[in-house]
Amino acid sequence: MTVSIAEPRVGVPELDGLIETAASGRLADGPSVRAFEGGVADRCGAAHGVATSNGTTALHAALHALGIGPGDRVVTTPFSFVATANAVRLCGAEPVFADVDPQTLNLDPAAVREAIAGCEEGIDAVLAVHLYGLPAPMDELRAIADEHDVPLVEDAAQAHGAAVGGEPVGSLGDAACFSFYPTKNMTTGEGGMVLTDDDDLADRLRRFVNHGRTDTYVHAEVGHNYRLTGLGAAIGLAQLDRLDDLVAVRRRNAARYDEVLADNPSVDAPVDPPGVQHAYHQYTVRTDHRDALKDYLAAEGIDTGVYYSRPIHRQPAYSGVDAVAPNAEDAADRVLSVPVHPALSRSEVDRVADALGGFRA
Image (cartoon, rainbow, N blue to C red; front, side, top):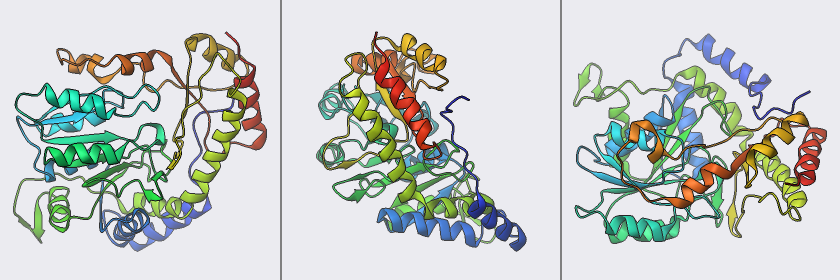
């Protein structure tokens, strides 16, 4: 039987919540959404949570509410899911790609400074991604954002349960955006959320995701229908209750893989720096022999994934974008993710570990 990289997500707690919400008749918004917003915000130490229909709409809403618009420039990473950059363009702005650190694969602050220096018109925001569940260097990025008097936004779509120095991801920027897609550390089916401590920003977000509404059939501005469903929130509430335990299992599984890779010259384990809690949305190794490793693991009945095989600036939709990102391009050629999710049995974790440890190029 194949050890799958995908995780089964819905159990009895989620079903109970779905039944209760369905019976209430409040399917489009309602109490479950408000409870979910409050629960995520409280867990992350934020004053406000604004639920959205998915992670992309969370990013778009956050950037729009921060005033990002046509002609603006947002510094971000080229090594992420394309939604990170798409959200910038949905605002009419342009992403300015800075290279990643070759070890963490998150934004390199030195590269951010270099990218800013190349922007004659200046920049208007910094958008950091906590890739694979590893927090970006937020202290250094905050210093850069403050120097240029621009907001710092967290793309935390992969980082539920991650932390820096005990501070949860989601509380480290001016706004933080989560995705609750089924593959994430916690899910609502489809869904997203923006967290912020800024009261005015939260008000702008709530209007924007609900057609600019300020009162019943009163719409002060043009917005979108970016609302999360009550059913999705019911699933999310059940998942939120177990998030700490689920992330602890991910970390335990990752530690098992770290052990076997410590002496393997053919495969590099992901880094987990001191003072940082990696949430291990993905356990992503790097190797110069990706195809061979992928085939070897497949022969052992182990599923794998490549996230991401092409940097955003090499996507057809971003043709013509000027970016120098050799570390991102190298990562795209070398990364491979293996199953790490908490639904794995101990024997399945051992199968993956033994296979990783046994591979030699």
